[in-house]
Length: 205
Image 1 (cartoon, rainbow, N blue to C red):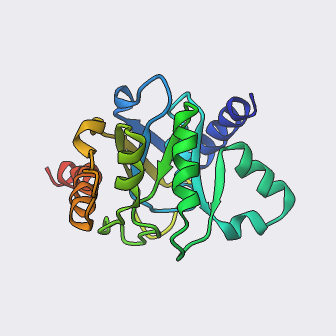
Image 2 (cartoon, rainbow, N blue to C red):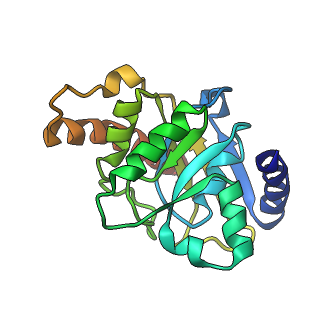
């Protein structure tokens, strides 16, 4: 209930302050339990991704955000955020992510781990492949595109959803090697990059 209410309010707010457009919404399943893997451009990214999908989401947020004021912390928790202590290999994060997916929530992951100020997509980390494989969930690649290093008033934002990557394409062997994980991560990052770079190709035509 809180999620549905906040989604409506935030969508109205976003349309006032930004010129936001969504593409590929038909690629977003109507049910939940999918991994949405996206490039990372701004603090608003988790919200931008969820606005076009009428299903509850969960997403990782750096631990520092939960140490802000009580009101802000309550809002991000209502929107499905759970804390991650960056720089530490915490297996609890993986377990929590899988638990959210099994409960029917979509999970937002930013494989790059940090924001890109020039719009270029980074190499990404293998955590997204590990979670998707262990949970045996399809991945929906997402590209977030806007000009400049930061969002400004009435910035043009494009959120593009790609075709899902089947869970069967992301299976790991029983003795998963780092080479396997990197290959699966590359498959996901390539799909994200194509969504972002595709916009640049269209603009040059």
